[in-house]
Image 1 (cartoon, rainbow, N blue to C red):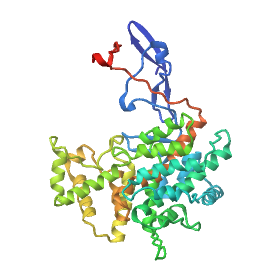
Image 2 (image 1 turned 90 degrees about the vertical axis):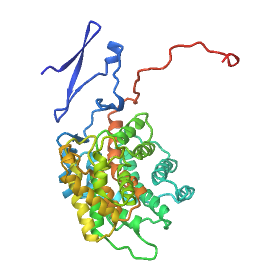
Image 3 (image 1 turned 180 degrees about the horizontal axis):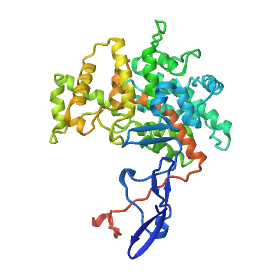
Image 4 (image 1 turned 180 degrees about the vertical axis):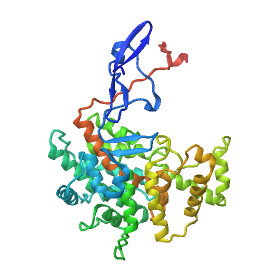
Length: 427
């Protein structure tokens, strides 16, 4: 195979190198395209454009493959916990026992949030969307940690990473407790990372915290499954903001805002809102399955199929088991969850959906689990952000260590040509 790609235009011939990734992905390197041809490419949404070379996550949508640093998502979800996966994504290797214990210990040492942050939280009304609160609170951390990260210093980089991994779960828990009108809680250093998150979120002021291992296991798996997903909208946002040498916290705040959108992290919230709408209309799942198949009907069945995975979402196969365990063991009676189970059963048996590979995706099952755990619908995307945190950190760190140039996309201008200015009295 030639290692060059040929472009012919206007009677001229141009050659561009072809790059091959470790999983045999091929890419045409067009860094010199504009300089050599005067042209740029146009690719709305960057669906065919690689913005970087990355060693973090491999995703093959056609074959339903997702790997972090070479490890399959199936193995990691079954055999590792979230903190191990976070370490793997950020530093490139699974930690040994000593490294993991130090990592967790260092995180616990940084888990206090400045008390003045509570004043910022108090300024938000209860009606504020939790993602807006979380983005603002994350950005506010910059004021309490104003020094820039010295990316040339391994210890400075490590300390900054530990600091945000420690404080972010506190902000997540405070966002939920603000929504519910509960006093703010710092958790317990004697607990594991995810267990501590669960306690900070759900501990009642007048009751002892009761450990719910099924809920904690389900939450741990969900966080692992959401930890990274290649160059998606929010991850690309973190990298492009960071490429201006904006700090880690500011870059993460931008990523949170990108994740907020219903076409990205808000998808699991959209699933529950759809289920609630179906219930309000009588709960007839067959009616809505028919509407989903009607090309002339604007109704969209949320949580089925995936824009990247063309066969099946490997994360959905993993989390379905946890969803079944949570619903089965907690014995929850909820008409919304009954509708979800009905839609799932019909979609897996309906020829229209099976032929088009429109299987329930991770957003469908994560929404069900969060609902069952008592997490409000508006908090679903916040939980997604907590899971995606190590992936964002890893991508920001990789981008800075590789000294990538500032992001600056081109455009094709389609506006008016030069026009003479018309004075106000003559318009």
